[in-house]
Structures are given as C-alpha cells and as structure tokens.
Amino acid sequence: MTDYFEVHERDGAARMGELRLADPVPTPALVADADGDGGDAEATHAAAVIRDAGSRWPTDREVPDGDESVLTVLPHRGLPAGTPDEVEAAFATDYTDVDYPSAAVVSPSTASDCGADGYVLSGAGGYVGHAAAFVDAIVTTRDAVPADSALYLSGVATPANVATLVYAGVDLVDADRAVVCGTQGRYLTTDGHQFLEDLDELPCACPACQTPREAFDREDCVAHNVNALAAELKRVRRRIRDGRLRDYVEGQARHDQWLTATMRRLDQQYSYLEQRVPVLRRAEMTAATDDSLRRVEIQRFAERVTTRYRNRFDAPLVLVPCSASKPYSESQSHGQFHDAIQWRGHVVSMTSPIGVVPQELECTYPAQHYDSVVTGEWTATETEFVADVLEAYLRRADYPRIVAHVPDEGYREIVERATDSLAYDPEFTVPDHPTTDESLANLENALDGEETYRKREREHNTVRAIADYQFGSPEYPGAGDDLFPDLQTEAFYPKLRVADADGEQLAAMVPQYGVLSLTLAGARQWVESPVPTKRVEIDDFVPHGSVLAPGVVDASDDIRPGDEVVVEGPSAFAVGRAEMSGPEMAESTRGVASEVRHVAER
Image (cartoon, rainbow, N blue to C red):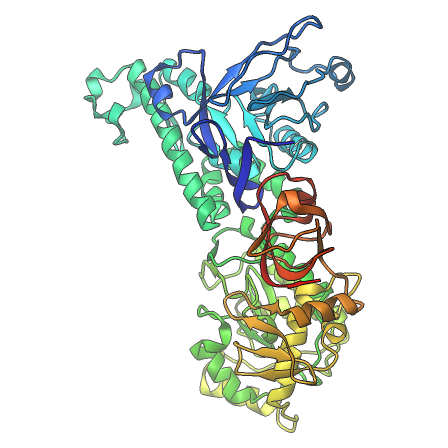
C-alpha cells in the first residue's frame, strides 16, 4: 500500500503529485541525499531528501530506522550493470513493509509491488543514450509497480532531458549528473551544453551566473547546472498543470538525437500512453511537426472516427478544407460553404493533423482544440496520414457520391489517393480557391436537386454521432442508436439538451469538449442498453463530489481520464467523470478516482 505518495494531476504518463513527507513535496521533484554533501546549490534546490540505507542486505541485517522527514531507500543487493535477468531474479531482495516513507530498488525484470512509496530504477545511467532500452525499461517498470507510487531515476537528469524523463513517467530525479558535468567544465542549458572555455559570456541570469565571466569557475558551473535543472523542473510542472507537456517535449526533442528517438519510441508504446492520456481537456494542442501526427490524441480521434462513428445522413459527402477558426462552422470560409450547400450534403472537413472531421464532431476534442502550422503545402507524412484516414473512413461509410470542394494544393492528391481503390469518382468543384464566386457556384450546382435535411435530423444525428465516438468501441460501432433509440433535442447547437420521448432529460452536450454529460436517467439508460458501460464499483457509501481511490472496489479496464462513468455501490448509483484510468482506479490507494455529478441513494 502506498501511504506517502499521491498523484494530483496527470498529463499522459507525466504526473504532478505530492511526496507526503513531514514537509510535503510537490513532484516531479529534485531530490538530494540526506547524508551526502552535494554542495550548497544542490541542497538549496532539493525539494525532498532521500536516505540510502545501503547497497547490501545480509539475511541477519535488521530493517533500518526511518522517519517521515525523508524517503528511505531500503537496503538492496548491488548487482553490476548488464546482469542477466535470471540472475537478477535469483538475487532479488525481499522487501519488508515499513511504517515510514520508503523506496525499493528494482530493475525492469524484478519490478513488482513491494508495498513501497517509491521505486528506484537501478542502472538508470546505462539507459540514457539508448532510446529503445530506456523506453522499454520505463514502460516495463512503470507497468509493474503501483500506479500511485513514485518512480526515481538517479544520475541521469539534465536541464535538456528532464522534460522527456517526466513525460515518460519519471517522478523524482537528482542533480548528480548536473554536478558531475559542472566539475568537468560543462555548462548545461535546456538545449544541450557548452564547455566553459568556449563561452565568452554566460547565457543565464541565475545567481551563480552573476559572477563575471573571467571569474566564473567550475564550482560556479556546478551551481549554475543545478539552478538550471531546478528551473526546468518548475517549467515542467507548469506544463503538466496546463496539460501541454507534449507540446514542450516536441520542441525540446529537436536539440538532441536521443531525445528525438526517445519521444518517437514512446509514441510506439501506444497502449502505455493511451491508457494515461485524457480523452478531453481545455488546453490548446499545438501541432507544429510531423511528430504531432503520432500523438495519442490524434491517433485516438482518427481511430474512433474510422471505427466507431456512423454516418446517418442520406446525402452526398462534401469534402471541404479545414479553417483556422474553431469550430469550423463559425469561420468565414465555412459560412460561405454552408450558404452554397444549404444542408444538402454531409460536410466532412479534411485537416492535418486530425485527418477527417465529420460536421457532427467539429466540437469534439481535439477537433476544436488544435492549432497547426500553415505553410500552404502538405508534407509527405501529412499527405499519407490524412489519405489513409480518409480511405478508412470511406470504407465504412455509405455515400451516393462525393463532392470534393478542396483546392489543388495537396488536398486533391489526398482525395485521389483515398478513393483510388474505392468505388467513388469524386467531383472536384474548385478551379482556383474554395471561396471564389466561381468555386462556390460550382459547389451549389453540384448539389442541385438534392433534398435538404431538417434541423431535427441534424441535431439528432449529432447527438448520436457524439455517442458513437464517446461510448462506442471498434467491436461496438454505432452506439448512439442503441443508447438513444428515441430522443428529443432542446435549445440550440452546440448547447443541446437531450431528452427521451417522454421529455425526461438524459444528457447535455458540453460545447467546450464536444461530448455528452449524462444525467442519472441517461446513466440508467446507458446501463440498460446493450452499449458497453464504463463502470466504477465502489464500497458501501454514498459519494458526494468525488470518489477517492480507496473506496473503489473495481473499475472497467477501458476507462480513461475524462471518460463519462457510472458509479455503482450497495448504497448509491451515480454518474460522473473519471480522473484516472480504470486500471489505476482499481490498484490505487490514494487520489481522486472520479468526480461525481449526480448521485442517488439506494
């Protein structure tokens, strides 16, 4: 059981938490050895302290003393780097439960739940520089130890790499490497390092760098390096709070080949990241590089649109370019498209990095929450990705024909590639630019004779499409039909209220996220429908405001942070929004598992 560490906020695998020592410490944090002499700079910036009880634990050695002021690293067997897994397993330490903050030393092959509050990854320095080995070690260890425990990497952190370490799932680091680099005359910055003899001025305003350049020595360099590392950790914590650490990591990765390789290797660990990345958030997502296409948010949206979503309009498909304004329908260009289309075609926007966005999902995260680099040209990676998504979308859709109101610059090639092997012959309507009078006239003429679908049909289809996206699965597409077989909509898009045939409210559309927020009646209809329900089973109590992890008995594996969930127990039935993934709820002993919006006593 984890008693002294709690996670408060999540940004994918990165977390902001609290090491609950006598003086609580916000994480990710810089730590120092309570019995060591790291120098004034290290002691000043170490927000927490650790105490290593020894590298060997003979069978006759007693459990060390500890207290709540430090995180005590329990005695462990020291094995050389490169020790085979079977040897490590044979000599693995059997840790004893203690009643003070403790950390166990583990390797990827020996990592397990030892009842500790933190876990020290042994030989961490051997992984830095080898992206595949590092990512495999972090993912394997993080999956093997409790979700609500801190992961500590010693001797590896620098101002340039600490954001990536935290992004991968690391909670605690020390300044050992920064100190060593300083004694070697290497001046560390967030974009790498410089040798002291090559610096004609000091590019930093920290206290250590107030020394004149000619008097700045290696001792000052140590102090600067630690200052820079501490400052970078503050920046990382701010990014986690804002939900934008990935944006920052993409920029940081450009400064070092190992960082770039590590980020890309992590992207290949989709299941590891996807379980931890929220399904919605308010923060804008910056898509500035081709690496953005591999983000979980992008891949998840494309997967759900091409496997869960079902088109319900009996009308031609009208492909249009995206717009800078979000949601698209509020932009000037899409207003002009609408005037020509007049609800006679089903509008789907083409965009990088999202792929394709049906009009019903234009508000759904991240469709209205991203900003991309506009150059007027598509990269080869963007073209391939959007073409693949469009082709997958069309293979499941059923349209009588396709009207492609897109410019030649990249868009036409994407449409042709996507439809090359399909039974569609797209009609292109843009001779120059999509908003010229001639182009808009061509679009209007292409839909001449098509019937206009009514406001009620648009709203009902929007509700069901969002339900497809939010509650369905690849094995259960088209969930909106079973979840809302009979419905009424009130108010105006995008602030729709959803009621059943008798007028009882079931849900409301949340415009900020483009998802549905269920009432108790809606939650009961979800439970009674054949649509798979995301459930949180709790003990015998009535939750008010939130459900804490200790009260969770079990939770559905497919719950993700931000998901709508049903909370059930012997005394209560409730609906709310998940704050952590289902697996994390089931194994955590601290933290908020789910917020509760409505609750009824049984």
